[in-house]
Image 1 (tube, one colour):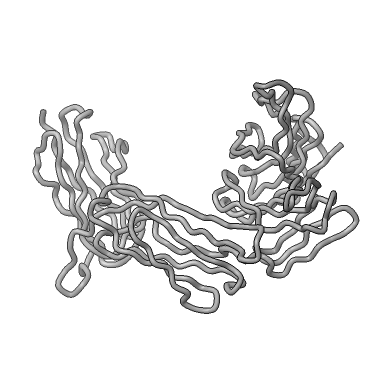
Image 2 (image 1 turned 180 degrees about the horizontal axis):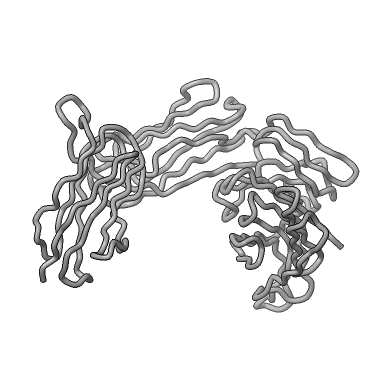
Length: 368
């Protein structure tokens, strides 16, 4: 039978059942197309429990399947699948042992919630109603709530308006949540740190008096409660990280016991070359590369007078993009980028800067 169904509009919908079969409709359910989820490692029966799409192409599916145990017998796992083509092809992005995922709801492409059951609570085996959340599109999951009173009563349905307010349905009951997650609700940081600008990040939690917060990275970081539920993280990035990525993570632990929430990200460090005497450049600019002609490396400089999205690309003589040198948010300032063309033949090339509404293109010559 059908275990999960969802529509993104009046015409486009999807359904899953107790098999590797997946159904989709584009005319409001009048006709359904059957799609088989193939190339899976399961043996025996697979059960697809829940499905959720954020638009016509991007969807997630949760279910359970068994795989051979090297020591004999089988192991059962909960699987999370991802599709980016409307459900015609699916990829496994995670599998979790000793839990059952029964339904899923994605708020956007990164944040989502899932419900089901966890088999253990304080050393006692059962089927405890549990809520998980993901911050990275379903690749990793953390438990945010487990009901110790729901022995053999998992959660099967979910409907949340936002992270803190929604409903879950179990066996014979519906549970309402208003703000039960004492965990990270918002994180604000840049994907790129501009040395020597100090690194800062802020994040919010609910019920700050009930959690313990720690942060970690490859250099000393401090965390401070700025307001009732808002924390600020700060630290001085060492010059040794310029041109590299570093991992930064937040751990929030419920001091009442039971649940811990993590979030982490990889952040790139580049060098803020200089700014004008008045603090920022006065206009957008793209300088001629130096040296020019060059072999095989050259330096390209550009300036932006305000924080904006910057894209710097290299094009061939036909105008085709062959290299992307920069594609990220930048602070106001002047920057230098090194371009090495060891694998390109001699000839004329172009480099193009797009920053906000500003676009400029210049020519350079590679001579070998």
